Amino acid sequence: MKILTTFFFIFIFSSVLQSQDFGKWTLSDDKNGIKRFNSVVDFQCIDTLNCMQLYQNGNITYGYLVKRTTDGGETWKNVYIDTVIKTRPRIFSFSYPNKKLFIAVGDSGIVIRSTDNGETWESFRIDTSVTFGTVIMYDEKDGFIFGGKPLPESAKDYKLWKTRDGGKTWFETPILDLPLNINNFQMVNRDLIMANVTYLDSKGNYKYNIMKIYNDWTSWYTVPHPGGYYRHFLNENIGWTSGNRRTKDSAGIDTPFQLIHHTTDGGKTWTKQRDTNYLNYYLGPVQFYDKNFGFCGSIENLMLMTFDGGKHWLHTEFLDKPMSPLHIRIIRVPGPNIAFAVSGGYNWVYKWTRPTTSAAEQSQSPELRITPNPAGDYIDIAVAGNRTLKNAVKVYNVLGVCMVTHPLTPSKGGQTGLFIVFTFVFFYIDTPNVRKVTEKSKKNSVAVY
Image (tube, rainbow, N blue to C red; front, side, top):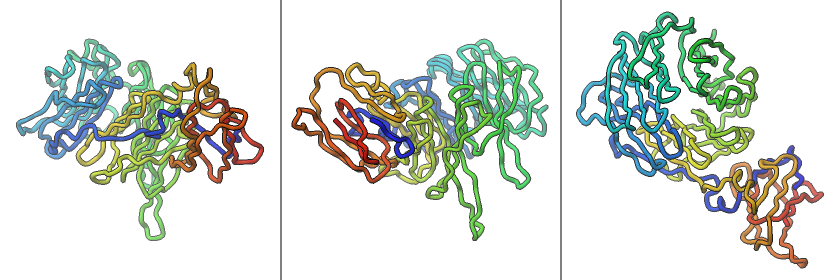
């Protein structure tokens, strides 16, 4: 199908997606109504089935709650819960590198550790004079803890501990001359850790640089951050940032503009993908599964979704009937057909699913071939063998709304086809069992045979 890309962006979905379109968000876990654990620490998955979440009482540190799923969020088990109200050190970070090992760290040098997927636990302190802000395990043996004084005044207040035995023992190691205010760590791969370096500009606005830490803290350097606090990199080169910039209107009221940027060269240069004050919503975290498929969360029941690496972002409803406005604080995308989001407030966990046969999988099917997918300047769809043409062609606009539905009917020559004239920019065509798609000479017109 010859399509001018200046007019259209097309993505082909198989008919198995017809009932769910862009998938569906459902409530996965509400902490069984336990409301006193009102501060989420983190939510991590090691695959599509195994995930851990940790909460604490964020006001007066009345203990912790750790929950685990081994079936992709269908059920959750409390593997650690303080049933008696008692003051505990605050927890700021945890690492979950495999099905067995779980390590969390926090105030006063506290370490909480399980080596059997949360069935049994131990806790100990390494250095009571420091606060542990981040723990990252590269694998089941090697990892690090980064921390320092609760309010560091210089980089000399930072400390670094490493482990070589899965967190059983830790040793302090000399640290590089680092900048202040390092936060928001991400392990990109075994040899690369990324973090934000926060600072204030001359107008008192928060700004960020991206810090790249190489080879177990042996070297580092920074690259400019294009704006917004949130960041997610798939590898050393491909990544996104999300957040907001604020401007004041004539009445002096702040107006948020949603920002999303994309890089393919490790942050040396950035492409702006989004800069809008859509509904005055603030953007939250961005998370991708691969270079094409990802989410970006916001508030007020809005979740952005993309299938083309962020060139186009769909506005999808997070829930049909939310209990209250939802502020998306954490997003995890462990697979192409499953994602999790943790909301603010009660910190409930929501799960997104879609049928397991994706467009990419369909394009490799021996029966249905779609090339290229996503579309370039043309698309060719072919089906091997004689198959009965059923159902209808559905055409969706850029907001994901089905604008046109046409049944497939046989022509005199025995072929099945139809002719559609479009008066809008469309996002994708859902065509079950289609043999060939070609463009007619008239603009915005597509024939399906």
